[in-house]
Length: 257
Image (cartoon, rainbow, N blue to C red; front, side, top):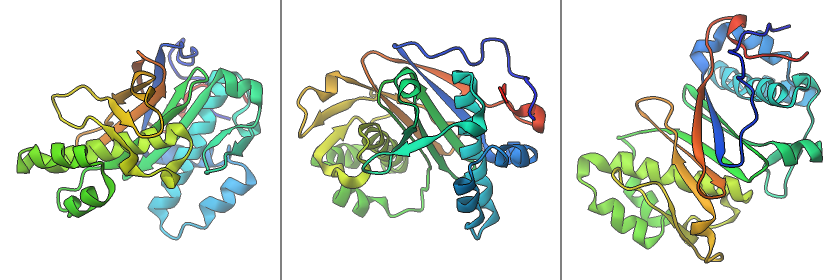
């Protein structure tokens, strides 16, 4: 059973005007994977076992075990006992409706990093991606981004375009995840700000003229070489960044098992 090692107040509930984003470096919690795996449900354990690559399996265990550990800490419940339901388009939520109204969450993982966003019941989405300068991203942008985003991307200096592309991609993905629709809603039907010197923002949404004033977009890249974004319902909302303590079982935050 993991010990209580996080700082006092680590699991204080997010206020309505803030979103907590936890960052977990997968390679730094390698020695904690066994403890995290024991928190998983039988279905989650089976899903983890189906990964053929060890790195993918470790990332899944760290992400879903870490999510349970955090939710259990915030809700003062045993992490392994938490139940989840899945929405129409695959977005998970707490099975306990009362707990879900108190605490909403979203999860993203890519490369060596995991981001977990938690809010006070508001819709929230988070996305993280490694920046790949070698990717032929412009055809993807022309096919997937809104026309004004493509214009803004091509206006960036060539050496800055890869970063701008991934800033745009993570902000768009985070918004779709917050809406709970994933790619069921077209990436071309809304637009985000993507410039490095421009405040992250939702500019317009085709089916929701008031959306730009009702959502907050925040940058939350966990490390150099990554892009990350969180989108939360409400405006304004401030980001509370919470790095996961690393190293062995003692790196696990407070458990209530």
